[in-house]
Image (cartoon, rainbow, N blue to C red; front, side):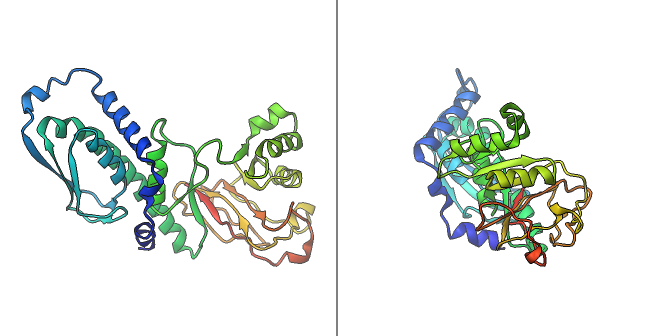
Length: 308
């Protein structure tokens, strides 16, 4: 599978600062055992060994977090499968050696973290595979809708699964949502203020609920436009002034659905969206704003970014 090769050839764990890994592992362990651990008197501290087995299919992800947890407990982990491996149950994944009471202290925290990260990587890999099955070559990306305190784990899982990050946090890109527009007083004023705040290094993305808003946002200077909460089907109307636009090169885009099963090519004649597919967006590259010239109406619009 292409995503396995992608992860093997790029050491994604280098993205994770060791100090951050240690801090996260320590906080998770403290959450689970903030005080006395009475069960340790039952097990004692004799040198012991635990074996990690994969009993469900999926993609292995989260090794650095698993390691960090047991490092805090003076235990040693030996892995038998690389990060990003396709798990075919039942398979031996790792062994952990250390004092018995430390193995059991870290067991649940480590398993929770590894299972969560692997589950997200597995879902991301499935979404990417569905996208690729359509012949589409863009990006599948995850948003900030993550579990509080677990974002690094979940974003990392996306990458291992072959997906991308839409933005890691609020500092990754300026997104103008409907509430920002209301607070600013108008679409144009909201985009202007966002552009001023973004400076030269950040992109500005605007959430729009209609094609009219999308054109207004693009004209105001948005780098990306997200068409959200749309009706199941949006058609291109050649008699409408908004229906004629020129795409310069390829475009950025989102197409959201529960399992990304409803992607279809977006052509100048009709934008096909199935009933469970609420959103699609596009923005020309190489132009400061969208145009309404019919000269390039024959171009095919292709989305290059999906949200999962």
